Length: 172
Image (cartoon, rainbow, N blue to C red; front, side, top):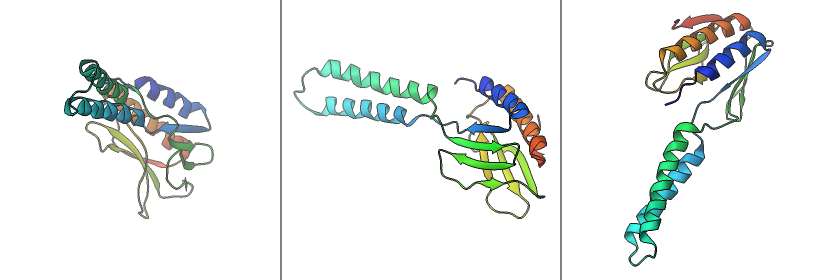
């Protein structure tokens, strides 16, 4: 898997200098699933339909589509979705996805750097002391390395300082 260290370094420099920051949702592009499923369907049809012309060529095409889908899953990310963090106005709002905006003004807000829901990943969440659903605004890829984890920790430090909220959780 490729590293997102360059992306995280860019986000860190934007967080230090810019009035707003877009934290992308790191997930595969849906086209990868479509290409992979098309290859699987073609492969099954090639095997099951008797007397189909060009069976060998269609089999290779099906295998190529499945491999292309797997490569797309690893290499292509879905663009234009995530969370916009207004560092100047302490506002968090979804970009290209469902979710409710939140204003982080007032006491009681925390930015947590915690273990993510994927294996060896870190996540950034905003929580309020009054409870409610945590607002997860970023999560690293599965099996992210120590360098990426350190960059996420630094990003959390900068964001908490700029937003004027408490920083809690893991610190690397």
